[in-house]
Image (cartoon, rainbow, N blue to C red; front, side, top):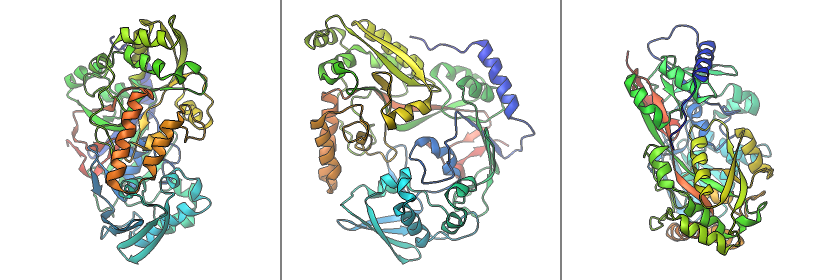
Length: 502
């Protein structure tokens, strides 16, 4: 199935949108980036765990550790971490790091971040949920901090990649909301101005990782056609998560290229076992998986740039089970399983997908076509991305399935299963035996044993067809001919490595 090309009217609208947002001359060392959206309160480093926060947060803030696209844990603000006891860790911080207001980053600043997350206000922050087991911190000296957890946590250094550190005195003086509008971190860029559709930043004079450009503008263009047009006309140098394989050849003809970014997520079709009885039966879930030719999806719509997934984890994640083989494309087996489950004449359901996703419309229409061949009718409903988030939190699903990726910003295979199980406060997939296995793995404090238990959970998720696992997520970012280097790990832009042609 070939992806649909954008019509001329959409392209003309895109040009209008670009001209409306982009005015003025461009300096030689200015980088212009377009993106579909900017998260609310991105200037509050505690407000989100989503990868969508990274393009801006990686400009202004630094995390304690960083995980690259290969799943390798790297030193960042913390240069070393040592487990000194079952629930004790010692962090060594990077020397000579300053915030953009000139204040020094030290163990006191890091301890202040943890103290806030334990406060009444901090406990409401999404980052707090990821560090809830940190019970106390103790400053040893300017660059040394001890962390105590309530239970053994072998993955704490990975979890610390989610914590970006704000300047503590400014955070206290400004308060949460005002700080989010005037963020102060140790990153390579400083916020200058922000409007509803545009964020402008300039190089920080104090950062330990000096930005490769003087200025950066991030521009919101919700429609992929508008972002593609902005890149094609030279209005921007970078179009984040915008390209589709059908665009690759034309971009290269313009002198640009595509950056393939491996995102820590698995694209999946989530089965709602709570509002649709057929999906309670693993035979039905397996039947739908066997009915879809996922390799064709990867080879055509995704341009062969990723691979079929058979479990809720990517290959670089902690606990990934390399022995799991994705269920094969087998329509005849799909029909037999449906008959065994009592659905010889097929069934019908609605699938909800978010707006703005570049490949989703083509992917899920192709899936609908495959399912139709085995007597299953899937109606694709497009809803706003924000409605997807709302449904996840409230359980207000209209459809019986949804496009919800298994995402793990800390590369832990168990991380998304806190949502994709009975553990979630409004679950859509609930299998108690499976959830018991997940809980046992989450509670394990020994690294080797946790690895084994997590791999067993991955195999179990495959066997029961927990979801229709499609492929490991990749995003395609367009770069213009002006861009020499643009290092990025799943949205985390290393601005210190950005290089433009002068």
